[in-house]
Amino acid sequence: MNSDNVTKVILSTIKEHILLSIGIVAAVSGAIITSIIPPLVLARVIDTITGGKTLPVMLTLLYFLFVALTGAAESVREVMLTVFGQKITHALRSRLMDKLTHMTADGLNHQEPGAVVSRFVGDVDTVENLFTSGIISMFADACRIVSIMAVIWFKNRGLAMVLVVLLPFLFWFTRIVQKNMLKAQISNRRAVSRASGHVPETLHNIRTIHSLGKEKYMEERYDTYIGESYQAMEKTNFFDALYSPVILILNAVVVAVVMLLSASGNAGVLAFFGMSAGTAVAVINYISQIFSPVESLGMEIQTIQSAIAGVHRINEFLAFDEIPPFEKDDGRTRCEDDSKEESVVSFQNVTFAYEDHKVLDHFSLEVKKGEQVTLLGRTGSGKSTIFKLILGLYEPQSGEVYICGRKVINIPEKEKRKMFGYVEQTFHMVPGTVKDQITLFDPSISMEQVRTAAKMAGIDDTIMDFEHGYETHCTEEMFSQGQLQLLAIARAVVAEPRLLLLDEITANLDAQTEECLMKALKRVSADRTVLSISHRIHAETGRVVRIG
Ligand code: ATP
Ligand code: MG
Image 1: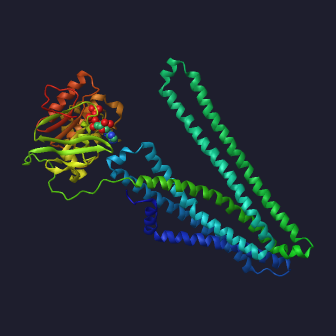
Image 2 (image 1 turned 30 degrees about the vertical axis):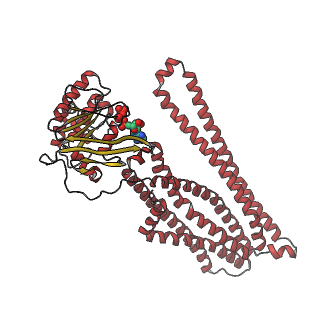
């Protein structure tokens, strides 16, 4: 297990952008402090006017200055938080990609593509939100509530007591509304994704639907999904429509009650609620100000909750094992033609199991330079596993695997392609041109090498027939199944490796295509060591090794 986690990434981002982090703290506290002052100045202004004195210009300027400062500090805070959030997202996504590319084959086996994508996208977004609209805003809102309450306490004790009773109720009501809205939004999203998934599904299976007469059934299912979506949307609208009027009424009621009490003639009541006209204006201002952070607090709690779940999922992913760094290397770069090494592949007493399932038990195999060896065995006997061990995707529990006398685990990735070419049972296309399919974006491979490889594989003519030849953007439909296998052979031999690994490459092909493929194989196998897996013994098959 790896101790790498989200906290580490965040801390190193803070360290890397220390000025930005300090700027955020300054802008957050600046916005809180400056927002407290304008109502106090306003109170002074009104008291001066109602007291019949002349209003000093400085006081008015001060009011505008602080209103402007609050606005400026808030916008600086927003900009900085957004930039910081992006830095965090960038750092997290880079770390996740780094993890994905270095994950062991065993770790990759545990990954489901949809889940990995959702960690990269959704979960990282929740962590970004934690900074842009979660933890820092929550801290700022809590500070605002406390500071406004403190000012109100000094200005009007009675109102402060009313608010202490009222704010928990307001918070509770806000949370209830937000929770219900979130629930409705989630069920709406689910219904929408089911409804949008239903359209391509119907299209994909349209022939089966027609032949089984399932048109009505598909229509009804679609209706159910969109019906669910409308229901959920109505719920969201209901809560949305309910919330604002309740808050406005509550705001008005508090102001009215406090004003009535402050105007009462009772000395006992006035001891708590009595205030000047100026203070009354300031207090009304503060009451409106305190409602919005309470509302925001509810949303921020929601954001923080989903960010915690996101952090947990990203940490789970980051905890998977990585391929260990290479041990000391013996310096040789490839199975050179003039290499004295006679043995190209060597399994020495290898025992290997996938978790508890033992596949190879003290297995040994020697393949000498220039040999053509076919592995034969029932399905599940471990033939492809032998290839995976040669490719260095897994390490044996005991014993050693050598290629050209070098331990497989010590061969750096970038050298492997020059040592062996691997043709899988099915071709995996990369996004790019036809040339990219063969080079796999290796800039050291020249166009001449690409064409030589394609000619050897017998696919050059087909490629040259495309409008842009090797520069044509590649799609699956451009090639038949057999041609894709020829492309895979070109990919395997382009770096001119001495060893070829072929995993059941003629399976699923008709006799004619197979023949074409066998001819291509004959061409590429000359002067090479070939280790292949096959269910059939061909006339050209050299030594046969039975597995299992
Ligand atoms: P086939 O001829 O069907 O391709 P094979 O000889 O190539 O079979 P392998 O793919 O090497 O067989 O699998 C050997 C055994 O290991 C099988 O029982 C298989 O279920 C198991 N196995 C293969 N890959 C994994 C994996 N990633 N995790 C766990 N078990 C695996
Ligand atoms: Mg296999």
